Length: 104
Image (cartoon, rainbow, N blue to C red; front, side):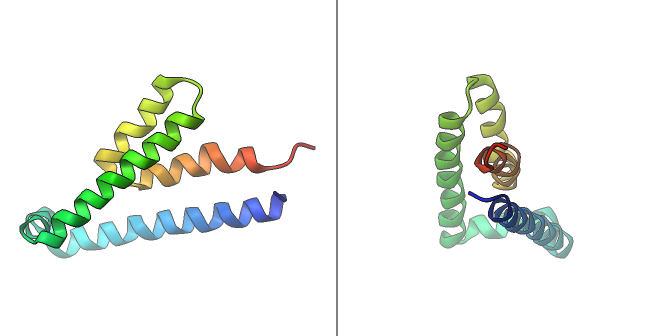
């Protein structure tokens, strides 16, 4: 993969992560912490939460497959279930994309 292509992917992933954080802040400012109770009261809210958890399990599997030390993999995976996939975004930016760059 060329440096330019890897850089474009890195920018897209970073922008998506920043947009996600901005939307979370906006949602919290609009309804506060009680909004989550409203989400869980709806069946689709529960399905959405389970979807996020399934994504966390899948991303955790990817992290464990790529990290050499299992403690490091666990340190990256556990926060996904507390903070969401913004942790996945950071892991991809820090760990995966730099490895795609060709050696000079």
